[in-house]
Figure 1 (cartoon, rainbow, N blue to C red):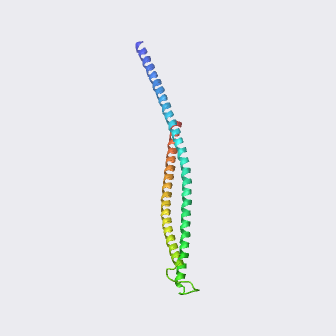
Figure 2: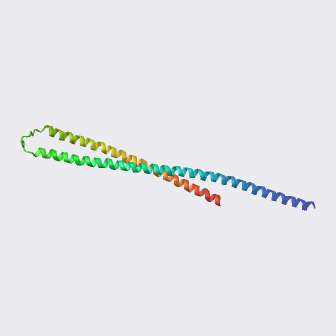
Length: 169
């Protein structure tokens, strides 16, 4: 009888240990599930922030492209004006010495005004080229930031999906 009693006690102890182990595993699973759900919520909040910043980056990129185009068009217009000025200087150089009573001295006022205009246009074009290069660098930086934000959002989406898959399994 005592052997039978010992066997029954051992079976009861094993069953109790299995139940305790199952209960502990269930509690650990619930704790890990709660932690995974918190991580998912954190990822979703970060994804929303990234998406908002991506929209802001897109707007900034559009504005920077618009500014770059404006600077380029202005520089092109200055080039055209510079060509007109250059042509006027050539025409003045080709004129005969006394035409219609006007002075043709090499340094008369219209000639000086044309030279000053040509120098101003050249200086403006150089300054616009500098602005254009700065705008291109800014665009490259903005596109880099946007790319970084997009990668971060994609990684967080992947992590959130992995956590969801773990919860389901």
